[in-house]
Length: 398
Image 1 (cartoon, one colour):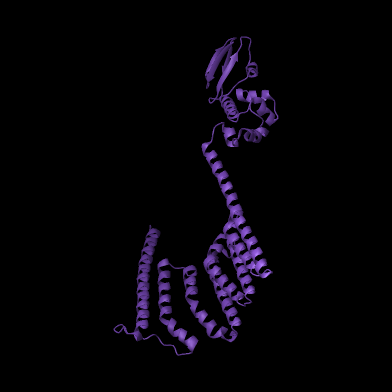
Image 2 (image 1 turned 30 degrees about the vertical axis):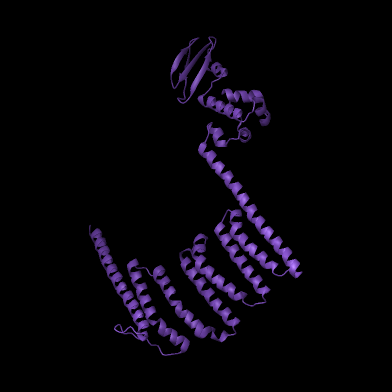
């Protein structure tokens, strides 16, 4: 018997006059040739062992030994014969693809490691970190949920012992629900975690306020609800609108939707306060009119920045002009709306900074600064526009 190693396309004369050629350059073929072999089929029947099969077999053997298993024990776990495991380890054959998961489980390796027949250190570290995270998450949830359960049990017993009925216990329940929404709930949800957490916190916070209102026999819940809704809208509405899918017609108007929601909630809050104080007659005048005037500035900024199609420099100039005019007239308009006085600008005398003139002087300096800055931005915008038109005209001429 003669053993010969053939690499690449190297060909050689075998005993018996047979020429053998390896077609795959990545394989290291070991052939056992006998003098009576006269064709390729007989050689294949003798077994062509590739480098990949040898490496795979060594990997299976090493992992089996690491886990303290014999071939018979591994075969028993996989429901195959011991000879099948022996063939895998000797590089004669591969296991059936349906056994991949079972082999990985028996040898405590990943499918990627089995397929590549190598230890994937990075993958093992990732899986180890994932297992640590799951254990930490489980411990975190058990700890906080245990604290909430123990707190509620203690409050239940104390409430029944001292008052013989359930009163303030419901405040404790609402408080634990609010704490749960901020601590445990984010660890339980995987999709839209921020929106779900924010929504649950808003709901449980209002539930806590409602419980306190009922417990104290108050009538202030609707005022607190409207105040919280306005505060949440101002802070979180832009973030929420940015992360939700809207119809195509509304995608370009998210800033408008956010400011519109703030405006409606502000008027809702004022309406509830007026009803609560039995002053509904003041809703339109002066409260409603004063609110409309105060909202002019943010709405003007929105229209200028989002909907006026001019350069950024000119938009900045317009915003500064509107700011200057608003600051200049806000005190006089407030007196007209609330006290029904004639419109008068604040007294100004930059040479006299006594108490009578100090307010008007500050307003005048701020207004002058806004107008001066607006003029500078407008001039810079005209220079940029002139350069742009010059370049465009030159390009068209060429």
